[in-house]
Length: 61
Image (cartoon, rainbow, N blue to C red):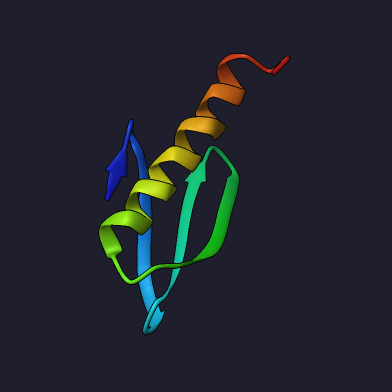
């Protein structure tokens, strides 16, 4: 999947538990999220990508 040019992966590792990963520059960010809905997990990862990208644009916040 892609969010603002950032590729990310979401993989179900057990029912209700998902592992996700994305890379911005040389920094790889990984995590796990509990949810029964893949769409909700993807939305959470997209929001995380947005936060990380905003840190790059405005490093003081």
